[in-house]
Image (cartoon, rainbow, N blue to C red; front, side, top):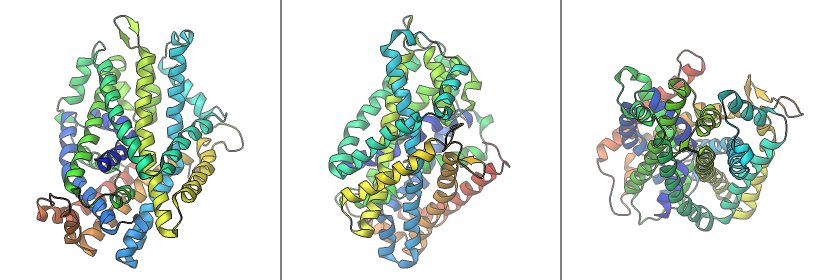
Length: 458
Ligand code: PHE
């Protein structure tokens, strides 16, 4: 159970909160949900099983796991370590933004004066812009708080830090999800938003529904980031991999669906379809604050409370994901060099802080670190692009080829035999790993590139 909680804690992240609802609203409502569910239990299931089995069979984190099988495939392991290394450099910055909003709502709630200040779109945008591009060191300071929390949990170790925190934070997160969804659904006009979210909309379905759903399945399940290999290496042989995978997927999808109920109905009711045009930071830090400021319950303004609860939820989701990213880098470093947890953890913490400064200031308008960009993308966007759109598809593809063709599905299958339930549908699984998953990954990769080249829109 501890393994399921820790892996689910990694899977439930910002992707569930700021991307899934947006994609569902845009690409077919109920149909998107159905497509997502089908892809999660087929291709997503296969790839997650592969990663966990590689980790558990070798008992090593990515670089050494692949190296222990064959030196020729070692590069896939390095890729599996490189992805979290890049993510680590910018995820703390986004975590810092959440810390800032958490503090912002706590202050509003405590000081009545500021609670009265309503938010319109212009003001919400100005607050966010003032924070990220104002040029003060605030984004760095908030990022440091977030990175510090991540580092403490990783330094405490797998049992005392990662497993224990996820055992506490995941149920709490679910509770918060239900509470905030209840507030959202109690708002006037919410019914129309629920309908908009869940009603199958055939007109909005296209090939993009499948492609973005699949991309979301991979991202949301923390695949192709070396994470599930690392967590798999800590998993006991007496646990059943297929059962655990299904539980992780269920928890992840549950939070994603609830997040849709939190976000879509009030945004739809207060801002209309227009309000759902943005995903990511635009949704979380601009549209939602506007929506929160208009929330009432029995005539009382409850926006600040809703905001506080929502950003607490986002904080838990983000910190447990970032812990899994850092743990993968620390564990890879330890396996490779034989270092102990504390020095390896401190080395990775130093790396995180060194990069936090330039990345957190990359949107600033002035100051010595202001506006650092690579090929016209702010540093943060560039790292996000490289890791999500280039490195992860390559890593996922190579992992499939490794499992399907180098060691063969039987190698994976044998590992799933330990712990009770062996993998059902062995032939279908082999087909998934050898053919369906690699082809699907190539299609996502191509779609991402075409989107970046602005040949297709998203
Ligand atoms: N599954 C995570 C999410 O949905 C993905 C992720 C994990 C991203 C770890 C970054 C770090 O957000």
